[in-house]
Image 1 (cartoon, rainbow, N blue to C red):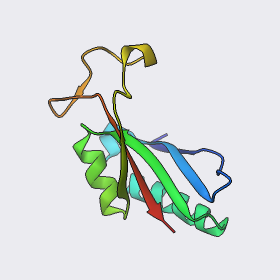
Image 2 (spheres, rainbow, N blue to C red):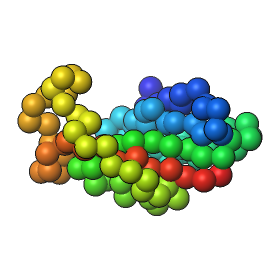
Image 3 (tube, rainbow, N blue to C red):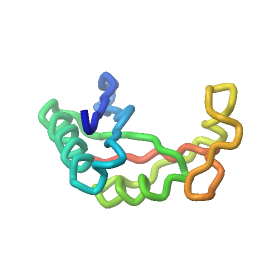
Image 4 (cartoon, rainbow, N blue to C red):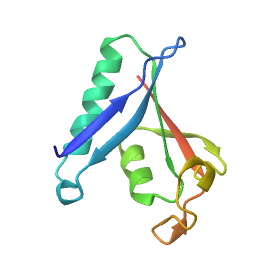
Length: 109
């Protein structure tokens, strides 16, 4: 397996959430993530949904860049989303930035 994408059940208000999008480290940059994301967006559109939503760490600059390049817009910040109580390591960081907050993004269909 080189990549995976997990969609949650659509909400009653026409929104679907991408719970997980991952590509094997050695295969990143090959368009696999983009293909998975665009396929999921196509499925959501075909089902008549209006919005795709996802969350990622505010410290993950690469993810924020990736999703915004695919038409996602910033929606909200969930403070202290990555805590030890939720199973995350105490000193988790990305790009030299402490991982604390989750950024929610959406894309209208």
